Length: 431
Image (cartoon, rainbow, N blue to C red; front, side, top):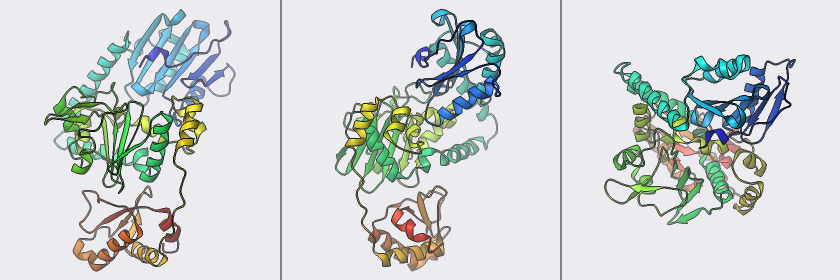
C-alpha cells in the first residue's frame, strides 16, 4: 500500500487558517474558526461517520502552513506531511485507542512541529512495518510474563471479541448472498464443483460453502504480522482445529485469481491465509488462528477480515452503498448486482411440522444473541432430552432446516439449528 497516495488533500485559499477534512473516497469538508464545534471534534465526527461505511484513510490539512496529518486505520498508523509535494513524509505506529485523538489534538493546536515529541517518527513504510512488528512481539512477551493463566484468559478474550464481530452476527444465508454479489462485482463467477461453491473477490477474501451450509471463510493480508505464507508448517498450523471436511476445501484447491496456493508440508498445496473462520457450527475462528494471535500479540483486525466486514456492515446492501464502500466503479457494481441470482420464492412449510417445532422451542429453546441459531435442549444431556430430542431431529429433517454442530462447550443434548424466517414468523405465537 502506498500510504502517501491513499488520501487526496484539498487545496485551500492561501492565507486562511481554515482546515480541510478528506477521506480516500473523495469526501471532503471544511472547518473554519468560529465553528461551534472544535476542529478536533468536527474531524473525529467526520471520521466516525465514514468509518461505519468501511473508509480507512483520512486527512486533516492546514494549507496555510502546507502540512497535514493522515490517519491510516488499515495499517494502524498515522502519517504527517509537510512542504510542497509532501517533501517531508513521516510515519508513526498507533499505540492505543486514544492515540488518534491525541495526535489530531496536537496537530490542530501546533501543527507538524508540535508532533515531534509524539514519535518516534519513521522515514518510510518499511521502517513503519518493522516498528509495528517489534511492537507486536513486545506485547506478546508481556502477555507471556503476566502469569500462568494469561494464555487461557487471552484465548477467552479473543473468542469473546470475535463473538461480537460483524461476521459472527451475519446469518450464513445473507453472507452467501453478499459474497455472490461481491464476486460478480469483482468480475468473477461463483464456481460450484461437486456441490461446493467458491466465492472470492480481490486478493483478500475467499469462501467455500457446501450445499448443506457448512463452510469456510479465508482472508489474507500480505502486510499482516500473521502472514506466514512462506513457511509451510506455520501456514498449516494456522488451520489447526478446522474440521476435516472443511479443511479439504482448501487442500489442493483449484488455482484461482483470488486465492494464493502455497506448499503444504505433507505435499500438495494449501490456500494462504491470515484469517480462518469456520461454519461447521456457529461461526468461529480456527484454533490455530487463535493460538497465533496469542503468540504474536496481534488482534482480529490483523486477519484481514475487515475487507469482508466492510460490506457485511452495510445496513442497506445496495449498488450505491457497495460503490461507496468498495474500489469498483458504479458500472461494475451495477453489472454485478444485475448478474446475481434473483431471490426465489420460498416454499411454505408444513404447518403441523412447524407447530411441533415451535412447541419444542417454546419448552426448551431460545434464539442465540444474534438470532442466527435456535438453541434447543440447552444444558440437557442426550439422556435428559430423551425422545423429544429424537422428535426434534426428525422435524429438522422434515422442514429442511440447517442443523449445525453445537459449540465445544455445549452439553451432549444441545441442538443448534440456523434460524429460518418461515419459522420466525410463527415463533411469536409460542414465545
